[in-house]
Image (cartoon, rainbow, N blue to C red):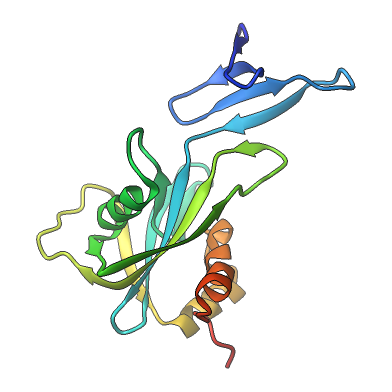
Length: 179
């Protein structure tokens, strides 16, 4: 595959609709590669009873069903807030009364280019007119049940766990209290 120049001086070595791989110039002459992908969001929906709204879906990459928070890529021309609301509805059938952005960052600083924004969707409630077009199951779990899922390695979306630290730091809100 012929390398194409990118806007950062890197050469695009491989491109798909979801990501591209770029070769960056290196001082020591050895190639260095990074993944460039769209910005994304991760949403922690919390219903009025304090339950977390999780999703279970089949992931081809790991060949099994996974337990996750709603998440997805920011579409061109869409804000992170708009994406968070869209993904919340598309993946769970829920809406929320308040959507709070906690912050953003890069998950793998050594290889990835693309920001992930973290949100809490407070007072989440089911949209009674929603008809799911995706093969996703919605689950409600208490914070204690969620704690146990993580402790037993049954929550697969490990890269989403910074949402709890951000909630504590940014909002002063502890979402997982120690028993």
